[in-house]
Image 1 (cartoon, rainbow, N blue to C red):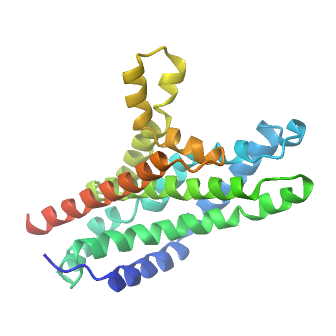
Image 2: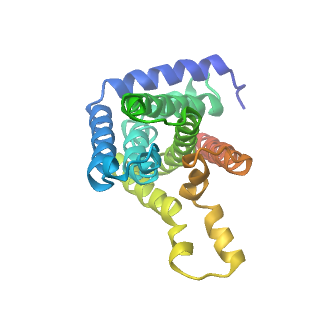
Length: 245
């Protein structure tokens, strides 16, 4: 097994970011994200009518919009490499499995971070209209980034298992829909405590709720970190298996 060298992963991540920025899909996803979230806040949530200095309605829609945005970001990461045959070239180069996986991961996460950065002018504009809690907004952005990291690592794994971009997009969207919204079952049905707790545990949206309230819960923080690490680890095992099969 080749040795993991961090600077190689950073170089690969930089290459991934440049590829994203040269693709029209990135700009389409960014515009869709910004428009959808803004329309949701000001039109559907009637934000100014609520007369509350909080952005919870704005960040509360992030788990839903991630179901479409994350597959767009991750669908071509490995699936396109397999389709064009360049994955064989990557596997013969002096990169370890962790170099490749972390390069893809940090590249995709940087792109998502850039999209989130584009949303910053909205809260900055609204903060002059009321006494917003800057700490709460920071927690909401931290939660959005952690939620995105876990979702991206899952999307990369599904892209690695898919043969083409369409399959990667559909597979990621369906799986994300399940893991995002499965906690709605516990809200709609009176389930036994153990079953409800188990369902909530695997829900990404459920672990995002504390961050959307301005709270950093160590349990939710640990869940996002560990789930991200787990999906990335499985991704390296899939690549290692394909290298020797």
